[in-house]
Image (cartoon, rainbow, N blue to C red; front, side, top):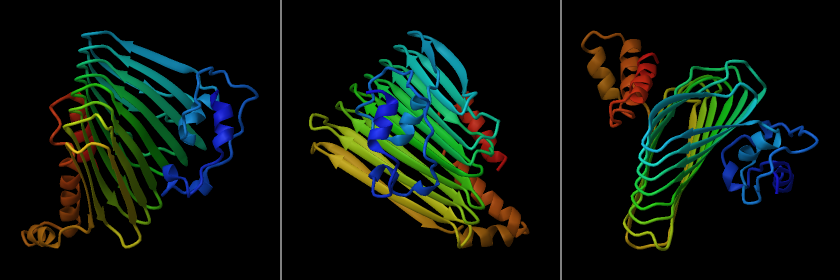
Length: 327
């Protein structure tokens, strides 16, 4: 079933659809699709509206292959409203991939990334783009990991409009590890939403989800994260933690963790904290002559920077910390 047919079959997103629980679905315009779908792949199992949009609009796929044992750095940028990128990372390869925004303002953008990670490969996928003028942006990632592979997925979201990042991960090989670190720095009426599903399909796999939000004005963030552990998957480790600092009374956050575990020998946790800047820390800084505004900036920057400190030294970590320092 092609993307257009499947898109018409599932219909527009509704609030009662668990994939779109917190998203303002009324803001999504009805698609004006081309007469025919050029993509001949079978999308009959795809349920996410945003994941189908690029192919339904006949986005020309861009494929990049990284050879076995290679060590590469790459930048990816979609030059159109709709993009479809296919990445194949070879065995034992090391790759650092930065995703860049299209700088031209559009009404809506939708990108899809299909990424296959070979055995024992190590990949860092990250984006830390400045604010853009796109009112509505979708990014969907489908990540498949083989035995012993490690994926570090890091992002910093700022900017105007409404954004949704969705990620479906399949940990298919023993020892595969996925680490997701997300930072939202929002103001005004910014709205950023995450929909994450991680499927542990092999024993001794690990996943870490760590999100932090700094919300000001009337901004809103949501994190909807699901972890599924298969019946034959022993010694799985999974954790999810969302920390939020509300910098205004009108900002808000919504968090929904979901654990579906079909094996007893696992360790799966989730947590969520929400509050204001620490008054004692703020008092400590201001009592030593630091202006209140500067003290608040120091505390928020430290809160954000701590998210990426555990990462190994790399160009990706350096880039992420540079962006945090400029906040």
